[in-house]
Amino acid sequence: MIEIRGLRKSYETRYGPVEAVRGIDLRVNEGEFCVLLGPSGCGKTTTLRAVAGLERPDAGVVVIGDQKVSDAEAGIFVPVEKRDIGMVFQSYAVWPHMSVLRNVAFPLTEGWRRTHAAEVERRVKLALERVHLEGLEKRSATELSGGQQQRVALARAIVIEPKVLLMDEPLSNLDARLREELRTEIRRLTRELGVTTLYVTHDQSEALSMGDVICVMNRGEILQIGNPEKIYQEPASVFVAEFVGKMNFLHVRVEGKDAVSSPLGAIQCLLPDGFGIGRDVILAIRPEHLEVLEDRESPVADTNTFRGELTSRWYLGDNVFCEVSVNQQVLMARVPIDLKLELGSHVRLRFPPQRLRIIEELPGNG
Ligand SMILES: Nc1ncnc2c1ncn2[C@@H]1O[C@H](COP(=O)(O)OP(=O)(O)O)[C@@H](O)[C@H]1O
Ligand SMILES: [Mg+2]
Image (cartoon, rainbow, N blue to C red; front, top):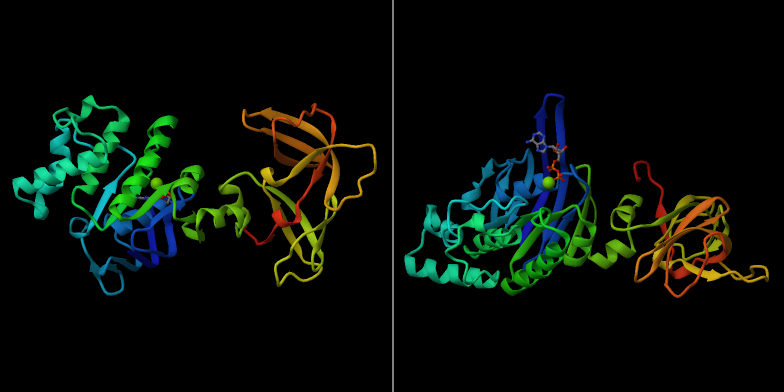
């Protein structure tokens, strides 16, 4: 279990103080895999380093398991080597002059975790098996590929059998194929170990595919916490909606209990409670939820259906990504490849009411 309460951290720079983390509250339950997702500079690494003990927070409390490892107010700060954590970073951070075996054994042969030889051997063997590096014990780390080096780093992190695993963009230096392979492996491994994990990435597909829970961050704050389905299907803000995938937005006005007026015309939707008539809100719909139909000669009579023109079209193999212009609004849609539509042809665009999401328009939302 990891608990973070009221975490704050600023750095002094030549240009004045930078508030890297501005009051974060987060609880990662026992055995859970939690992803911190956000753009570069939003404070992910600082948060992770505060949990690790590599950074001393200005305010707030960090608890790992049943140990309060830092409490700025009470002056408590347990140093990194005394925290029950394993860490993996973006750079492989393996010692090039050492063999795979010595790299992985290192945490058990130095410092206060020093263990007797037979136990070291047993644990190293197990860790190497877990990351599929059996047989490479004698190789020097520089003789390994990037993916293998990251496996060494992973083995070294788990060899101490930590309560908590912290990973900071561990796959960012690998090529796309290897990244996907290791995603699966990291998840399998953390499940097998039942270890509580805090994982940092700026890659939304990594976050969606790996996380039990995703925490979307921006500018030192957490904007939304939820499981991947919730974050993708029910984003609470324009920022979250756009960060986890493509999204169409329309500025609309509430006209009734289940209707809004939009630049395209009236749209039926399910309005959550608390949106009074006359209020300006944002209507959001994912490209894969917009329905594109062939146009017919008859006038459009169906609800939520509008006539438009196909202005762009990209064949993606398993589907076609296209843009449809309706009343000078351009909407993105993903359609099946068997829908044969020519560029410039007229189409009908349907907004299924149950797929529409209403987002409050807040200053700083975008
Ligand atoms: N040691 C440091 N000194 C000064 N500024 C820093 C330092 N570390 C991070 N920052 C700043 O804090 C902010 C958050 O950084 P970071 O936590 O590394 O973000 P992320 O990992 O999400 O990219 C950024 O504006 C960054 O420039
Ligand atoms: Mg970072």
